[in-house]
Image 1: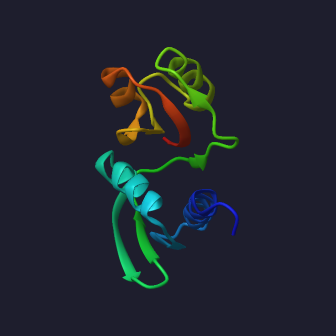
Image 2: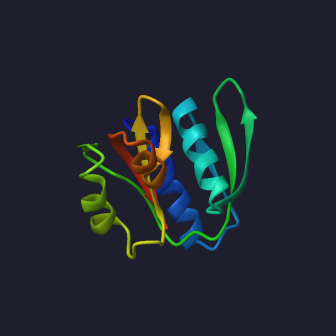
Length: 125
């Protein structure tokens, strides 16, 4: 497993395509923060860490159409975020980009509001 975020989001999408209501993934602190943001926006109903040692997580899926990791991790300024919103999201107010900043993980809207850039991690819609 080279990229935990990419593997976890691919596993979530595979579970969604198989019409399962949950997905089992191996997590990390970054993935937990990412899933918290997805939960706040309704893309994930709930998640539970089943094993603290191996960080196995059970994630209940919400109203999710697609989620993917952004590879390579583009570094963006506040002004460049809009370009990537148009590239990855199907509509302006439909979905979120997750940006890793020096203030933690933020959605693209929060990053623009706080006037900071960062590294693009993933998107949900």
